[in-house]
Image (cartoon, rainbow, N blue to C red):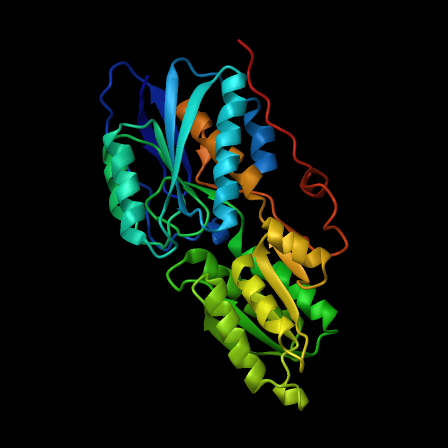
Length: 367
């Protein structure tokens, strides 16, 4: 495999790599990790705008192997991200860029050490780039440090944030919460009581989705009160059990004992709340999730789930692979590239995703 080195990184700015002879890689300087928040980055660029700025994807000589590290394939979202990265690699291969991807995940969404071991193995195998979706903000830091010291580009793809990773690709997680809050507020006509089921406390996406939701409710719907906020650690079972407890406390006997809506940080937990709600005869809250997995779409069609905020992991995986190729080609890729997302309800659940976000495959330079 042909390797690339020589990098200049400006704090919260851009990263580029230049081709060089030989198999050794120089260390890559890391970006300044101080208070890094991709949702609030002044250098963030929307993917479509970046595509227009950079033009066609450059052809690369030689062959390349990328490593992809997801949280856990037990969750459909991460399986779809895997498909997205593999689809992207296959499309670029067909277009003349010889790239393949080895996509793996931890054994579960709590297997932090197992996920780190995957990264370390990919470094040992001297992969050309590693694309990581950390379980928490901290568990992959040692692996990312080692990869950068070995001269391997690292792209942080969604969810846990590795502050020293030179590039981030993913949706604006804060905006996930904003979209959910505005939908719920409008459905409730600006009045009522709501609860939040949060993801793992160490995950950036969980914190930002919750913050975006709460701040939007406070700013736009002052007569809506968040009465409960508890974690279910991304677990369907934990969310179902939590909702069962809430439905006992909030039995609908009075307005003060009624839950009008429940926002869940992911669809897996939202579906657990849906299961609890099906056994609940007292209240029927609005339920909203995040991720856009197929089961959530089916639940919306069946009238069991009201909405999900879809961040289109199939396309996000392709974008992440594209950014890694552009980096290796020496293009100036911004540190933060925000990927498409959209609120899905009964109004658009049967539309094609490509209609909702106007997706077209990127162009590849011709030889």
